[in-house]
Every structure is written in C-alpha cells, then in structure tokens.
Amino acid sequence: MAVEDADIFANEKVREAASTGEEAHGLLMDLDRGLVGWESGKDPHNPQNWSTSRKWLLLFFMSIASTLSPMSSSICAPGASLTLKEFNLSSQTIGTMMISIFVLGYAIGPLFLAPLSEMYGRVPVINFSSIFFNAFMLGCGFAPNMPSLIVMRLLAGIGGSAVMTITPACVGDCFPIHQRAFASSIVIGAPTLAPIVGPIAGGFISQQLGWRWAYWILVMASGPFNIIMIFFMDESNHTTILERKTKRLQRELGRDDLHSQLEIRMSSLELLKKSIVRPMKFLTRSPIVFLISFYVSMVYGTLYLLFTTIPIVFEETYHWDIQQSGLAYLGLGVGMFIALGVIMKFNDATVVRLRAKNNGVFEPEMRLAGTVYFAAFMPLSLFIYGWVAQYRTHWILPCLSFIPFGIGLLGIFLPCQTYMVDAFLSTSASAVAALVCFRSVFGAFLPLVGPKLYGALGLGWGNTLLGFLTLGMTPIPVVFFRYGGVIRKRYPVKL
Image (cartoon, rainbow, N blue to C red; front, side):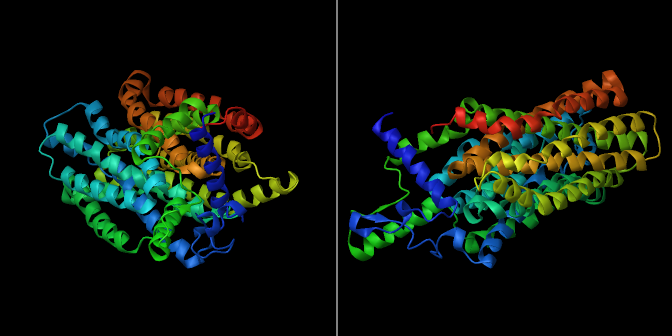
C-alpha cells in the first residue's frame, strides 16, 4: 500500500471512531503535536454530543426537505393524461417516461453530490442543490413542450437527490448506533411516504387547477423552506467542523502548523477525483453493497411500476376521475405507516439484544434481522392486486391490496438504508449514494416496460409475474443477515 493510501486508510478509521462517539485518543486535542480535535469525549461541538433539540432541529429540516423532493417524482402522475392531451400526445410510454425520468436524476446526482458533502460539508451541498431543484421545478410548470418538460424534470431530480442521499449520513453524524434506527425511521422513513402523498395531492391539484399548478404549488412550499434552511441549518459533518476549528485556531494562535485530526492531506483536486469515484467503488468492489443495492432496486422499480398503472386502472376500469384516482395510493401509505411503527419499536431493540448476545460487539447485519418478515408481504400484495383488478371486483379490494405492499416496501427499504450507514459510517454518504444510484436507475427504466407487460399479459398475469419475482427474492434478507458480515469483511472497500 502506498504511503498516501495508508494515510487515507488510517484517517478513515479515525473518522469512523469520531462518528460513533468513541473517545478515541487520536481524536482529542493535542496542540503540542499540532493536532486539532475534540476537547474531550463530551465536547458539545461534536454532533454526537449536541442537545436533543439541536439534533432534532437539524433532522426536522432534513425530513421536510427529503419529503418535498420525492413528492416531485409522483405528484405529476395523476395529471399525466392532461399533460399528454395539452401536448397532443397519446403514447403511454412517453407519459411513463415523463414520470420516471425524475428518478433518473436520483441516479446521477448522488455520484458527485454525496462525496462533495464529505469534502465540503452537508450544509453547502444541500442548500445549493435545493436551489437548483426549485429552479427547475419552477421551470417544469412553464414547459412549452414534452421534451423540455422531460429535461427539466431530469435536472430537478439531480438537484433533489442531494437531500435524499445525505440525510442518512446526517443521522450517522448525530446519533449513536442504539438510537439510529429510531431516528432513521422518522427522518428517512417518513419521507418514503412522499411518493404516496404526491399523487393524492397531484390528483386534486391537476383536476381543479391544471397540471402545471402541481409544480408551482410544490415550489411555493419548497422555496421558502429552502431559504430558512440556508440561515438556520447546522453543519454536522465531523470533518468539516474540525477543519473550521483548525482554521480558527490557526488565526487566533498564529500557528500555521496546526492540522485537523480528520484532515486528509491531499490537494482539493486530488481529493475531489478520489471522492467522486467512491459510490462506484462501493458498487463494483463490495459484493454486499452491490447485492443489497440490487435487491432494494428491484423492490423500488416494482413500486414505480405500480405508480404508472394505478391511474390507468382506476380511471379506465373503475371510471374514477383524476382526483379520485390519486386516493387509490392511500393503501400504500397505510402499509408504510404500519411498517414505520413496527421498525421504530423493534429495530433498535433487536440490535441491542443481538449485540448483547454477541458479547457486546455490534455487527451492521443485525439491522437486517427482521427484514425477511416484511419481504413476504410484497408478493402477497401483487398476487391479490393483479387478480382483483383483472376481474373488476369492488374498488375497495385493489385499494386494500396495496397495504401489504407498503408494509413490505418500507420494511425492506429502511433497514437496508440504515445498514449502509452502520456498515460504512465514515463514508456513509457515498455508500448510501451507491444504493440510491442503483435503485433510481431501476425506478426510472423498469416502469417503461409496464405498458407492454400489462398489454401482453393483462393485470392478472402481469402482476402475478411480478409477484413470483418478489417471492423468489423473499429469502434474500436471510442470506444478508447470516452471511453479509463475512462477505463485507472479506471484500473491504479501500477508498
């Protein structure tokens, strides 16, 4: 290993100790050696030691921002028929692309925004990206044609991806292991409901005011909140905080020899080049990251397949109008709320119990202990939904069939994302970016096969095919839980 790589590797270990709140000697202040660190293990400037109110104020900002961003992915879904009509288009595939292209931005943005947040801090990256997001969402409302609308939704998705990727890293910045799942359930889990709320709101807005107002109203909510974040959001990245402290002490003490304990001594350009490739390194060099990302991506893609079919089913089969069809998504939301409550109550407690059985040693795979039980709900939901819609049963049955899908979706999604933070804490933004990137590619392109799939097989057999696919994936969490640690340790990612 080269000297430079060895220094970086050692520094990553130090950063991980800092993020877990461990009172590592190598992180404490040592001015005699020119090293700037925390004053003590209880330093109030360490985000792990912030007051509860300060932590939750930061996470309040993150949760609201990361709710508004994914709402944009689906708020236009109920009004897709109106958009196609205004632009004199009839292709369902183009309508599907208009919806899913936003999620492709979620695949592109994390590749460079997440590493930048590890280099320059969470706050500047989130705020700049949010401004970018709002600008192009506003542009969507003024789009003169479908190509311009698709391009602006793509760019808005890139800007909106920052908060989605960096929020889990902020949870890791502020909370120790035994509190992380509860915090994640609120800050990461609740915004997962946003793609469900989006179509409900979008249905009423599009029918009553027009499809363009769905974008404008969202910007009216997101824009002012973005301004508030610029003035009141605290930086939680440990490296950035200590770098600022180092610069302050250099000025006050007149000592240019001072260096942060978490500093990586490379030029900004070298560090940028090294950081930007991190998410792809996770995907290509860590089998466990790739496998979990692939698993979550298949689940996520299936969700967006449902998004593209629900308006068609309820408008054509049940003759609902646009605003009523948005209400069909409520079943997904109910299921997610149920899963959220279960995870908040049991996930952290399960980790504490398993850690005690493991002689007090925490393994990130403990986070996945209950995922297999949630996974079983997804094929059940797809089987029921497909055939009750195929035989045009009462509308309440397909609506209720979405509840188990919501349970399975969040029960898989949230523990897997929290696992990425636990397993790769010092570079958690990049690890989560790898997952977000992979799943967003599936979310963007898998729905494009929906019209042909259901056109060829019908709702019954089309959803049965998806049900068998998710049924075949149901045992996968057991493999992650039992053998994920072995795979992760055997193939470490040297960044």
